[in-house]
Image (cartoon, rainbow, N blue to C red):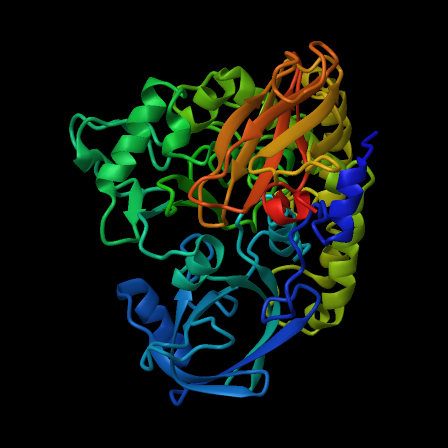
Length: 543
C-alpha cells in the first residue's frame, strides 16, 4: 500500500497532487462524451447523394453546403463521403467528412475546422469507438469521440459517432507543434504493385527497407517532408532497441500495444495489416503513435495474419498477450518485447488497463450508460445497420450469422479472467512506499540549489529510474536512483533509493516520475505519469 510522506502531504496542500489516473477533465467542448450533438447539412442539390457517390468514386472533390451545428451556422462548408471499407455506393448510411474551412480557411467550430462522422460499421452496440477512445485517452494522445444526430436537407439520417480529426489542431493541442514529420499508417491499396526488390505485405509494420521507394506505397506522408526520418526510425528498430528511445516514444508505443491486445483491437498494428495509427515526430525528435479507427475493436475484426481464417470467440477471449513477440514481420512488437525492461513495462501497462477498466467490470457499466443515452436516437434511426433488439443485446450476445460480432461483455468477461491468470501478468512489481524531495534542513543558513529525491521501494527492487525535466516543452531525461548509502538515500541496502539532480539553465522547478523494476515487473509512480507527473520547486523546498 502506498504511504505518502510528510512532504508529499505538504505538496498536496500546495495543489501539487498525484492526480487521478485519467487526464484532468477539460471544460465541456464539442466532443463532450456525455452530450449528443446535432449537425444539420443543407445542400441546394436534390440529388446530393448521387453527387457524393460520384465524388467518392471518382475524385477528392467536396460538395458545398451549409452546416449548422447546434445554434451556429457555417456557410460554404465542404462535404464528402469518407471511408473505404465502410463506403457503399447508393448507401444511406455512409460516413461523412465535413470541412468547415473548405472556402473560408479560418472558419471553425470551437477551434475545430474538420469533422469526421463514423457510421460505426460492424458495431451493433454503437459504443465500440466512443468507449474505446475514452479508455485510450487515459494513456495516450488519442482523439476525442462522442455522438451526433445528423440531418441532411431536413431528414434525420441517423446517429453517428463524431470523432476528432487528427489534424493541425489536434497536433498543436497535444504536442505544441504542427511542423513535425507526420505519417498515416494504413493498409496499402489491394491493387498496388510492389516494386521489384521491395518486401511484400509490409503496410505500416516499420520493417526496414534499403530503397526509399519501397516506403511510398505503405505509408501516407501527411507533412511536407519526412521520408528520411521514417527510414532512420526503421533502421534503428531493425538493428537494436538500445538507442531507439532517441527517435521513438517507446512508452507510448507500449501503451498502444497493451491497449490493442487487451481490447482485442485487431484492426490495428496487432492484426494482419499493421494499420490504423499515425506517427508524429514531436519537437523532441521522437515519433509518437496516435491510434485511430476503433469501430472494430472488442473483437469485431478477427484476423491476425494474412490469409488466415477468422479467429473464433474462444480464440479472441484467449488471445496471447504477447501476440507477435517472435514475428519478425512485426518489429514494433517483437523487437520491443525482446528488451527485458520494455517487456516488463508492457506487462505493467496491460495490468493497469485491466485494473482501471475491466477487473471490476467498469467497462460494462460505462457501455450500458452510453447505450441508455443513445437508445431513443437509435430506435428512430431508419437507416441503422442493425435491428433495435440487436442493438439492445449486443453487449452480451454475438450478432450476425456470418460476421459473428461478439458481445462486448461476452468477449471481455472471459478475456479479463484469462489475462488475470496469465503467469507473466500475475507477477508483482516493486511497491513504491514513499517518495520525497528533501527540503532545506531546519536552521540551515544556505538555501538548497538541487533536487534531492528519495524513494522507499520494497519487494526486491533492482533498478529505480527517475524521469525528469525542468519545463513542459523539454524531453524527459533519465537518472538512476541508488541504494548505496552515498546518494542521499540513507544506509546501503535499506531499500531507500536516492539521487541528486542539478537544475539546468537556472530552472527553479522539476517535473518527474519514477519507474521501479524488480525481476518480474515494473511499477510507475505516480500512476498517471503520462499526463500528470509530480512537481517540486526550489522556493517551496527552501521554506
